[in-house]
Image 1: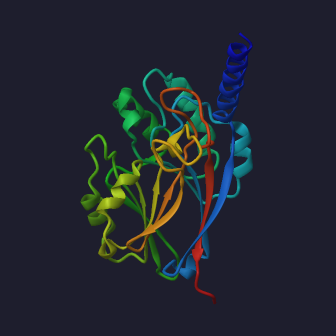
Image 2 (image 1 turned 180 degrees about the vertical axis):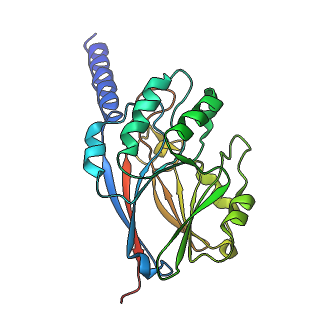
Length: 258
């Protein structure tokens, strides 16, 4: 009997720990350097948040990053089935306080009335990157392209269209895809220097090194830096273990000394 109560107590403690971990608010600062980053930009800082799902964005996070980011990117799964649109709107109002905001679709975003979500995003001045590109240019004529593709799992991604929209006269390309599996389609000649993704939640529940997906982090493939976030919310069950939630301040700059 004592063994039973001991196991039950351990189970309760583990559950409470996983519940608490899933509700952590973290901003991780990552500095990414590139040999081809246009020097006239100096540096660009991106606030990257992905996989919000059912969570309410904390004002503490917003206060921590306000005034530090040049742009904001929402990496998909802003919402999911059953989340009130009032909560989504409040989350967006907070996120928009950080800076000009860009959004790509995730698979769970299609569980809701996506026409209504599309209308909400547009009414709030949030730019949707759906197989398209946006441009930033310095006075010295150097150009940076921000490409975004629709969700890969839903069969809506068209990397070819985003690349066509970006064109060839670009010094540096950033691709945002909710699902990091797009990396299998990337080729050096496409000139994509950075891929930003979420979707995997870092496995969400990990036991030591074992999880359904790899933990978020940075890898390099075919000349592209691939950055995958653990994400902010949870999918399925509202628990995490070994893959705490995260948002990011990404500082992009040149690796070349002056």
